[in-house]
Image (cartoon, rainbow, N blue to C red):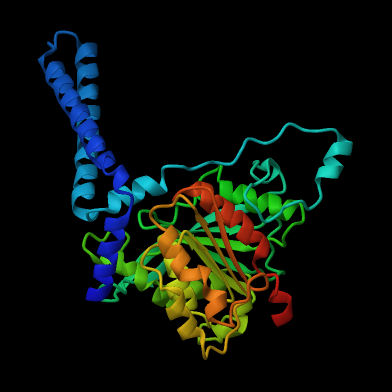
Length: 404
């Protein structure tokens, strides 16, 4: 555990020092607002109570100001006690570029609409607008779930975790569905990919890829990738990323497969999770990319057949280690997709070292067959990661029909 703590410290220290002033600026802004609020309250207290209506207004303003001040103090306590040095910079980088889904396109003529309702997605460096527009009809749904997990970074006691679950349009218990577990970065949680929002870009991509016939719709799960209490305040906040394989195996995957229609033959008495590995995928951005490599391939390859690493974090296993671990592995890799921005000062070197040379080091990875390394202009942000998800969604589960 000490080694993992050190890795976590190295990781967060490496994250975008260029954004280092962000947290200080926010703190200064909060302080200014707090002073302003305090001044306003003092002024209100001095107002005479001769008019009842005026007194009521003053009391209301004082109450609102007190609540606002309490919220700010709570936020400052969270910032100081829960977030280790360097995490703030990572959060700033991860959120430096985000996009929502586009508004629904204007209705075209019936003839042109018919022409558009055909597959047209390609794996590349651009997501066509028709795949990012909200669908007002024929779209999937998103459920927010709570499930019982364990504090694997602590005493392994039972805890409650949350996740978002995307279900494709027309979801039915009469059909079996593949599942992608989509992981967040070091500063995120189950909502970082935006599935909790009504204008979710991930949902729009999934809805449109399914609608136009580019893919057979599948389930997407975005959990909190820390195997600990969601608001833990010590260094185990970082350590918990490395222990998430235990939660996947023991808690999250069994929950999903007991509540949704998947290819797994679930039983409360235990079941063969390996039998349905061709119908599960794991992917993630930054720290989630590390989890895809270190946990998905390194520890849980018996559970997953498809892997997607988007700007994998600096603590990812390097290609030599992964190749060595795969040497005697009995489980095939159906596809391992990677993407990273060439201007990504945080992850380009680590992601390259983790994956770019794998086909040269292991015959388990064949470029163009079950492996892809993609790099494109961009930094450590969602411009790259949305593209990665769009591309991965087209690749994943292409071989599942061979293993039903």
